[in-house]
Amino acid sequence: VDLRDAVEAGGSWHYGPATLAAAVFRSVSRDEIRYDPRIFANNNSPDDIRRTGLRWNLNYRWSQQFTLSASGRQQQSVYVSGPYIGNSVSLVPETTMALRVDYAPLDQANLGFVTNFVGSQHYDASPTISQTLTKLPAYWTTDLYAHYRQGPWELKATVRNLIGDSY
Image (cartoon, rainbow, N blue to C red; front, side, top):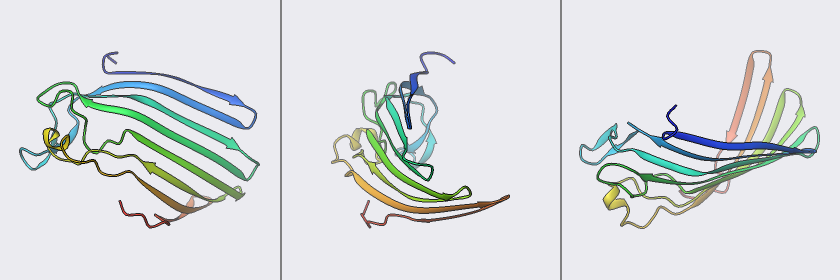
């Protein structure tokens, strides 16, 4: 791996029933599949994209059955080559977060909910145009889920977007 392409440093810390993991990162992607407004289709972008940020995850085992967790990512994504150099990348939010409560009444079954926050982001348009548009607004979703395992079989059910927010 060329260190100019990807660097990440982080760690994991444990304190009783709590675990915190965090990492800072910087990566440059090449030939990423993106929408190309010149041809009105997806294409391998010739432009390099750099992502720099921090991601974290906190888990707290409340009891044998209950686990609480929170996670998030703060990142900046910009073009670092080509005609859009310095422009933000569309459809990449700077901030994402999640909060999860999981209940496992049996070893083979669990249920819970997760609420997700997705920060504002640029519309998918030509990078020169998307920078001039207002951003897509941030939004929250909350999902309810259940999962059951028996031998090689699994049954999963999810009710998505309980709050009914539009996004």
